[in-house]
Image 1: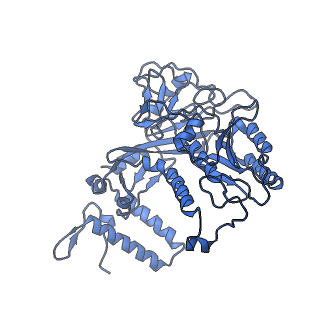
Image 2: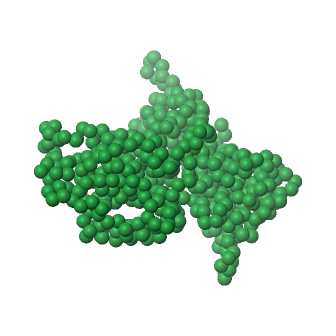
Image 3: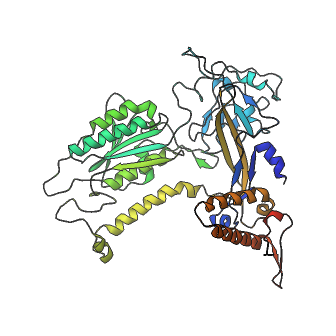
Length: 489
C-alpha cells in the first residue's frame, strides 16, 4: 500500500488504514487510531464547484461519491445515517453517465465556491446565479458531452424555508408542579436560553406533574399536547405510537426508516414563537394536598423524552434537560411517597436496605441508560464492512469569498488479528502521532516520565510486531524501521 499516493488523492495520512472492530483490539495496537489531515492541501485535480453543497437533512453530511443514488426517483441515500434525501430540481438531468463533480468516484475532495452575495441586493442568494452545468465545465472531465442543469435552488434540499444543516437537539422537561415564584424564575431563564440557541437546533417541550404532556410545537392555532399517564411505564414503541412516530414496513440498507413527519421536535427557526408561548402558559394544574408533596412523574417524563428522540432518529447529538424542584413521587423512577409522613431516604437507609423504591427505581434508570446506548450498540461494526469519515473545512479565499472544502473517505473494519491491520500500518504517521502525544504529555509531566512512557509504548509495540525465538531473541519487521526499539543504551 503506497501511503504517499493515498495522501495525494485524499490529503490524509492514517496511522492504521484498517480498523479493528473492538475496543480491546484497538488498545492492543499501542499506536492509537488517528488521522492527520491537511485542510488546504494542494491537489493536482481539485474540482471547484460554483454552488452550495447538498446537505443530508438528518445528519448534516455533504453529498459525496459514497452516497447511493436512485436516478429514477431523484433520491440519494446518505452513507452516514442512511437517510434518503431528494435532489432539488436543478439536478433533474442527473444520470449514471452525467454526474455532478461531488459524485465522481475519482474525487475524494471537492471545493464549493458559490458566487458572492452582491452588496445592496436583498434578493440575490449565493446559489441563485450558479448553474450545475456551468460548474462542471471549469476544469472537470464530464462523463457526458452535454450538461444542461438549471440553477440551484436557494434552499439546499428543496422546499422553501427548510433548514439544510440541523444542529443538536434540546428537549426541555419542566416540572409543572413548582410554585408560581419558581415557575416564573424558570420561565425567565428558559427564555434567555432560547435566545442564545442557533436557529437550526432542534427543540421540544415536555411538562410533567402527575401527568406528562408533550407539546406539539408545529400547531399554532392553540396549545396542543399529547398527554401520558404518569403512573405508566411505557415501552419506546408505545411512546412513539402515541406520538404518531410509527415505522413503515420497508427496510433500506438493512435498517428501519422512521417516518419523519412530526411536529414535536422541530428546528427553533420554525417554532420559536410557539415554544416561547408554551413557556409562558406553564402553570400548576394540580392542587397539592396539605401534608403532601406535589405529584411528580419525573421518570415517566424522561422516558417519554427519550422515546421522542428515538422515534425522530436524532443523530446530531441531543440533550434532555430536566428542570424540577423536588424528588419523583409518582410512577416509574419514584424516590419517595407524596405523603410528607414518609421522609426521603438517606445514605444510611440505602446502605441498610431500608428503602422502599431503591431497587426498582435503580432498575428503571439503568434501563434508560441502556436505551441511551442502544443506538451505538446496534451500530456495532462488522468485519469487512466499510466506514466513512468526512472533513468539512470552511475558509475565506484570497478574493474575500467563502469556500468549503469537503473530503470524504472510506476504510474497512477488520478483525483484530487480520493481516490487513499490519499491512495498513503507516509508520511515518505513527511516529508523528506518538511525537505529538509526547509533546502534549510534556506540558504536564516530567521529561523522564514522558521518555519512560515512550519507551514502554515502543517495547509493547515491538513485542506485538516482532518474531520471538526460543533463546528470547527477537527480530523486528523490516517494514517498521522508525518504530524499532534501541537497546544500545
